[in-house]
Amino acid sequence: MRLTDEEKSMRDGAEGPAVAAAMDLLVRYGEALGAERLCDTRNVAGTMTQPSPVKARLVEEGGWAKSFSVINLDSDDDIEIPRMKVPMCQLQHGFSADVRGHAPYPEASIVLQDDAESYFSDRGVNILATCTPYQVGNLPVRGEHCAWMESSAVVYCNSVLGARTNCEGTASTGAAGLTGKIPYWGNHIPENRIGTRLVEARVDVDGFQDWGMFGYFVGDAVQEERPVISGRWARPDLTDLKHFGAATATAGGVEIFHIPGLTPEAVSLEGAFGGRPVPEPIVYGERERRQVYETLNSQGSSTDVDFVLLGCPHASVDQIARAARALEGRRIKDGVELWIMTPRALRSVADRNGYTETIQRAGGQLLTDSCPAMSRVAPPGTRVFASDSAKQVHYLPAILGIEGWFGTLEECVDAAITGTWRGELA
Ligand code: F3S
Image 1 (cartoon, rainbow, N blue to C red):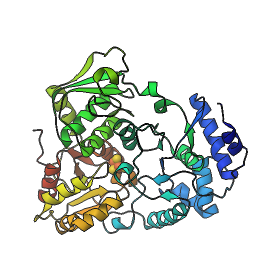
Image 2: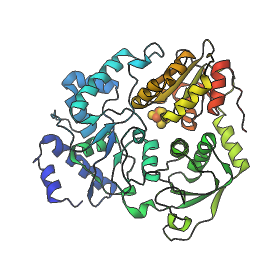
Image 3: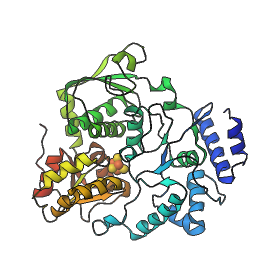
Image 4: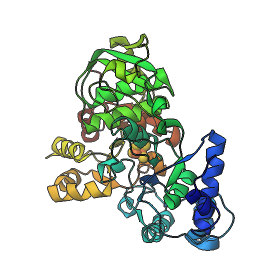
């Protein structure tokens, strides 16, 4: 890998041992990937504060410096960690204090995470604590090189914002934060962003549920390729696009998609394929739509729902407002829990607008920072859950050994009120 003089001097220790270890890691990582050089980044989204047994042991042995050195810098040395060189944020992590009384989540993890937040805040890490950093102020501009983790955020960053990131890891984001560098490969290279597969909707794709199901189909059909979408889609909003992207990255490994006339790197169908011949389409019709719905609902057998989960990826203010409207004046059935996951910054908007109070008056909870899949926890005794998120329905049954139903927000709220799943495909 070719390094600039500045990069060589960082590697050789001119900016201290932590930056040297970070540069060493990035060079090893880049060479393993076949990258020829590094590029500059000023937008890093990673994870440092998520509690785990390994982290607890390392912190016990040598504090957060030891934990960061081992986990984020792949170094056995005990290195003092300086302030991050470029803007960096913490993505979703474990649950915080607001989960107390609602799930059997270890108090020790809450305390450990609180401690981590103050250590890394002092080093310039913004504790956004969400899988949707783009909803709460971390919004890169088109073409900007980023270093992000979290598959649903990565596909949104590349596709909807037109910024450039690979699906990075704990170590590479830690090193990027300290150096402002990341290997130039994969999605950073313009040619690797051009569409490779065409998926044509021959049935209407309109609204949150349909964008989620369509995303699940697209991800399964193209796996790690770069889909271009055509056909009968109605203009999506931020919420639809985050659901769509998350589903493509769940059923497959999509990191970038294009919707000609909508997403920034696809002004036309031909442009989305970079002037190369447009391939034959993969067709999404009525039959495929029903198959996706049945796949997502294949993990439910009992209609007795005891847990309803909304907000995966973390809910927008609009989604919270819709849930509050659906819950207004109603009461969640005894023995059923309803959680809505959202970034803490949006929770404060929901508090000010009275949405939180409406949701809580109905017996629901607006929780922040994490989700059941990330923290591997649900309300005690959960056997059957329902969600409007294709991603959560895909993962949670396997993670927690529970049954799952997929439907609309209104069907999920109905399940919370009645304790019974009555959803069906419209
Ligand atoms: Fe976010 Fe958890 Fe879904 S981290 S994308 S709410 S699985």
